[in-house]
Each structure stands twice: as C-alpha cells, then as structure tokens.
Length: 157
Image (cartoon, rainbow, N blue to C red; front, side, top):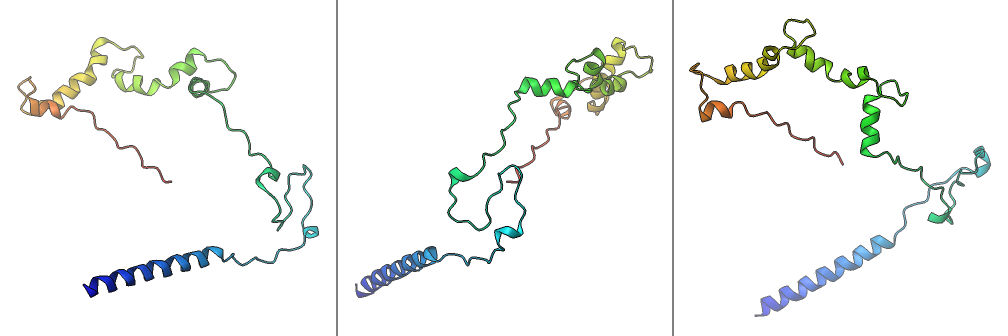
C-alpha cells in the first residue's frame, strides 16, 4: 500500500514541477535584436510603411490586406475559353480545347468524323479487353475496361 501512495505523491510532484517549468518558459521573452535607427530607411511614399522595431503597434494600426478575387466559377470557366481576353468567346476559342481529342479520333485525317471513326475508340477498347478473342466479355475481362482512377494530390500544407 505504501508503494502506491509513494507513486501517487511522486506523480503529483512531477506534474507540479512540469507545470511550473512550463509557466517559467512561457514568461521568458525572446531576445530583442538590435534594430537600426528609423532614419536609415527611406520613408514609403504611400505611408503604409511601418516603423521598424515599434512594439506599440496593434492589429488596428496595420494596413489592410489586399482584397481577394471575387470571381465565381462561371467567370473562371469563361476566362479559360476566352484565349485572347477580349470578353467574347468565338467558335474557334470554344472548339480549341476539343481539337486534340478530335484529331485522335479522326483516323483518316480528312477533318470529317464518321460513325466508324467515332466508334473505333470503343471498338479498340473492346478488342483490347477481349483476351481470348471470342467476341464476348466475361466479368473478369470487363473489369479490365474500368477507367484508371488517379489519386488526387495530397495537400502540402
């Protein structure tokens, strides 16, 4: 029984000592570095410059941060298509993002897309999945046609 009481008293002493040590560390201020006089720095023209080393400033005395962009999703989407930034989307600008995908489907290169050319992507995908070449997809073969999901990049916060 005496060991339990001694252990409890020792634990309380350690916790109390830790709290005092923590409080003493919190009260210590970091060393203040010597700062050159204010006259050594040129004054800012817009009066937004803060005096160097003045600890009397509060958060109310600081300049306001710049305003954040208020563009909504639709405005950002519009700007992605408006390549020349004239405020108008032409047909060429709208179709420009689709040219690469179209050229991949246009096998004969005549800038006309027939049904066969359009369907060739699905047909090639089917042919690649049909491992035994019987013209039918089993469950295992069909599972190979699932789109490959890429993981979103983790936040580097």
